[in-house]
Length: 305
Length: 305
Image 1 (tube, helix red, strand yellow):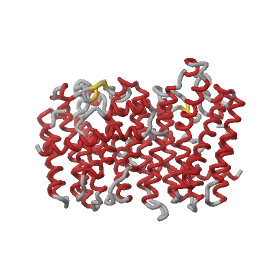
Image 2: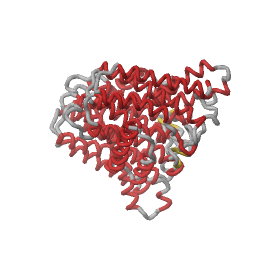
Image 3: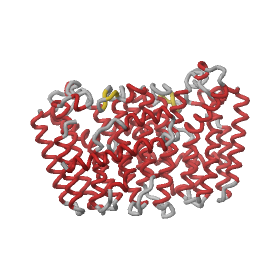
Image 4: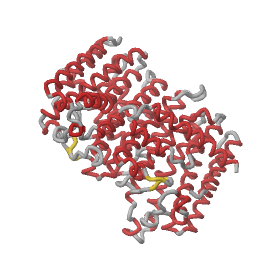
């Protein structure tokens, strides 16, 4: 399918650019090694593809914002490294390979995460862009990234996820409270950064505020759909394809599948996809690029890892 | 002394502004609490004062860049929280109070650090500034912060500090290697962020590249002087005044005092102060504000905590 080709092309460009960007930062050798290890672990590179497609909606060409696409992948990678730490989710496997702290130790993994988060802003802010990406537009994109990744976004999502541990055992009857907490976790832990990717693409291209808001709603729904699909995979998925421990069910973690059953979780995911498409329909921009974004919603639902 | 009044005034403005800034980010309540706990722990707030004085050198008024001054204090605070974690320096006391992880647990402390680092960019990039702070100037300041705090700067300093643990026991005769490693640690772990404060003030005011470079050299020497003084305090200091465990000597940590003795370490610190002043002398700007920066070098040497 066209969308797979598009995502693979963006993924390839990002994967090739990342090691050179890290080398250019002149980190301590072992630190640079740990950073590159996690950046090279693969993954779909969905966020860079979303940013590029959104940038194209307003007339840009994806190659022009490669550093920004790399930056959001660095933020995503930092969040995975820190989430996997023993004091957090204590995961030993990530994308089919040992987690960073299993290879480099906890201190180095912590620092690699800190470095990737900070360096994402260096890469985003210090790179060359075409004249279309004016300083004010770059500022707006950087502010979006910081806000969605920070305590009003992704970090609070992870904090809520930790609060939710053992929720099912503590409050077996608290289904309503569980759904509300779960909505918060999905919104912030996952959807905020996916939404940031779409918003940043629009901001870099100079999209009007109204279009940016509509795209933000699209990105939010897409992110929620992604996480709903992820929960289902965690229950029903093939561990080998998933590349991480299919462990949420074992840990009695709060998921839609655990609260509502797999079938109802599937219906929710599909409803979110349709809601994303409705939000996208209201955006004024290039039809071809909008079609790419619409297909991403389908891609997110049918993925197997 | 005038300089104490100046620093105290900037510290007071930053201390008053920080809780409102955090509240405005809408973090999860417990996360916000952990962030505010560490931000309110006091400290000299040296970096905000340096940024403001540097901004004044090029004609600005310090109140105009209060959000930027708060942002660098947030980055500094994040670094202290993460450094104190058990997997890092394992410190139980910070600024006379229990370290963040002793109060909130390791997971929450890790997240509070992640949040403060990310939110520093939100505060820096999303705030209102006077027209003098044009988008391109704000971009330059944000890029400086990211570079000095990231893997080319502070994070690699901490990584090297961890590598240096046990150095004195492993290589008792390796004094020369020790001095070289120590220079790297001081430069990156401490001086880079102090230098960033001075550089950011200049960048926000629109200082020419040449003046920014001279101020950067001043900031670097000042930061090295600060760390040399810190090492001496760790050996000779009063634990109560210091507000942290005077533990570096006990841990046989690599310090100038351990390698060269306290007297020689004092001579080094004084030489760094003089070098800082020479670099400052070459800067073209307001004499009164330059005098403030010069006095900060003296302040750094004679401090007791």
